[in-house]
Image (cartoon, rainbow, N blue to C red; front, top):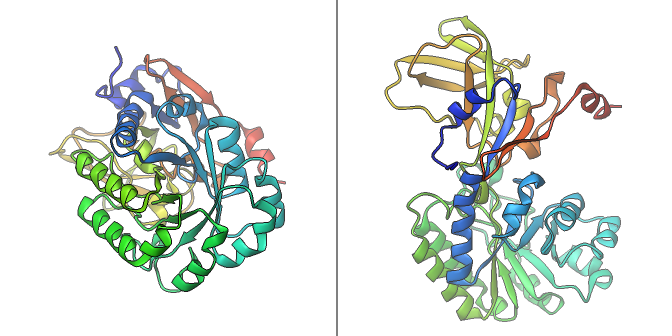
Length: 383
């Protein structure tokens, strides 16, 4: 019986004849480990979870995710439509800036519409009144290791920062969203931020029916204090008599996705450099944006160090430097780990290099090629 413990590298080796590289691989058994924790949070705390499509929108696994999650949350009209058509259940629509056409279309798609500013809320309220409406609040604090992703950075446009203005508009909404927990895998910090929100915005929360605490809370991490987390959520919900929502994206898919590549060349220039048939900018863009090494599951103590680089013309197309247990050769497979969140949603055709296929390893072990990309896809992406 297939298991989440099966080695992805060995699985890739076993299927290399039928699965040309590069390809993204989503393993449903690994995905299920996260989904079961999400289900436990709902059953224990009452907090609902809606999938953040900005992070992961590979709808070929939505049938499985739908069983454990309550719907989707979006950052654009297209994402909201995808959530409605491919996931179903609740459809939370949010955008930093709606157009008139967006709002007209969302009336027939969304189950909740969340505005980023009081000005947009007032402008579009006549069009969407009757729907559950929300307002994003910027509490002025957040947890993020990167200024690029910090919603509380100076002059942030993300959410209403004026408490009095939000209170004045409270009669137009029945919910609020706080998205300030980016990359937060520390329960103590989550707890501190939630206490801050409770104290600063208590009079506003008491007027609401629901509160979204956003995404970025890494509660599916191994050894995360899930019981304490559930207790904190249920206490918050009870105190303000609200339905709590979480918006897991990477938290829902962490450790379940991979990018499988093959070495096409090994060169030497002050270091051994293995060139693979993929690229950081087109296929793992977040690693380039945030200047982090792509993750790789390797045994400790490797004696053979290689820089692994992509095959685009970008000089900085480098995945990272890793210690391998043995020497590498042209034709060897290299598997990057944790390549589900913020990867497939950002893939692009830079340099016109082959777009990775999308493969799903189903619960029964079947390798399901759900999408292959061709030259025609590249051609039609241009004009």
